[in-house]
Image 1 (tube, one colour):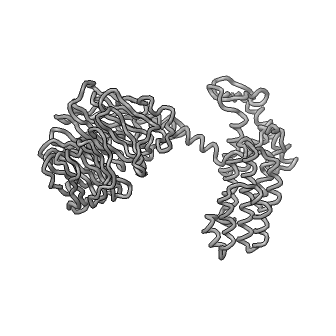
Image 2 (cartoon, helix red, strand yellow):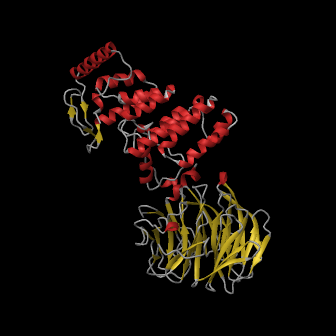
Length: 580
């Protein structure tokens, strides 16, 4: 490929324009230098801007000067500063895009399809397949526009003589053939999900072509803005306390925030339970909280987000022994509770009525998880069985297991994760009922509870040594785990105590992008760690008994709750919000 600066002169300038512009640029640069203006390459080394510019810029010499100038030119054009962009091209001797690309763009914009196909040979591609894909995209637009104009003969000729011989995307080729049956242009646009030339289909074509043409020739649209956004995202990720949806970021300084963005102050203490509170969980839409207690009741609370408060909605009574666990249905219309009376109960979250009671286990039911259809669930019990049932109580599948401590189901309903007394996590394919063998997650001590991340890529495990481990999964559905999966935890979280625990403590992930690990502990405190770095960000006091369970609101990232043996539930929020 020819070097960029050796290609034809910049965007349609006449010879007189080029000469005058270069003269202005040279005069201005010389005047600036005579006036004492200093140009630096980004690391403090000065240069004269004309005679000896560096090839790379930046404190680490990572920024290619020529590419940087091209991105500046593209940004100026996109912002509407065409004259400034042209002046920069002339002054630097570096074109934003080669003349071949400009000619190709013009052909696409004008709908000169035969010329556009011919000009493809002047462009650079990563390989022959990429070039064929580009040709397919151009001819697809040619075909659709011919159909839209009612020129069926021309369209069919394009399909048979030009598109079909490429042997690219046979499924789409079949769909294009069926498009001949469309009644009019509106029908064609709807069936083919195509905007048409009057609504930007040609620009959309250029955007698609940028994905297959070499980036050195055809710079991806908005490339400089994309790089800036990536840098800002990286700053947000590196900030340990970032926890707001719309952060106030600036291009002029690095992003920083403090502990004020994470909940650290008790806003409310709920005291309606008369005994130890063992489990709490927010509904998926964040509007309700459910709590389970040793007092044999569960309570559904209504979240008042603007006031950062919870109000009791209904008390669920019916269990004859303590309730150990609860789970919301995916649509939040029902709540399942289970515990020491060997039963599972399903409740209406709106009325508090018991929809169904199930007694298919012979010992206490330790955990329950819903399938995505909100019509089926899986229970785990100390009777060493797991059972898949519908909400009518019909058992559809049974698994023999060891003493079941906890279980979870992936969001797509394909996988069942089970924690037993075996010090390992078992993973089952729910459709076939078979156990997956491509990934093994084991620990050296007992696992008491499990939490699966929203992206289904990580598992958070609570251990009976009062430690928390984060394991990477990869893609267990295809038995192709990531390189880190099964090799041990990718991060460990340790609080103020590290000794054999006496009780089950349930932790969770929460906050923006689930960036935080939240846990109770037997030291009566609530601990918050940064998920990636493992740094402990807060150790919060307030409870007078073991903190058994925590839950971070999935919608309001400024709220989480903790449940304790002291019979209370604490509602936590950020200090800054309370002060205001």
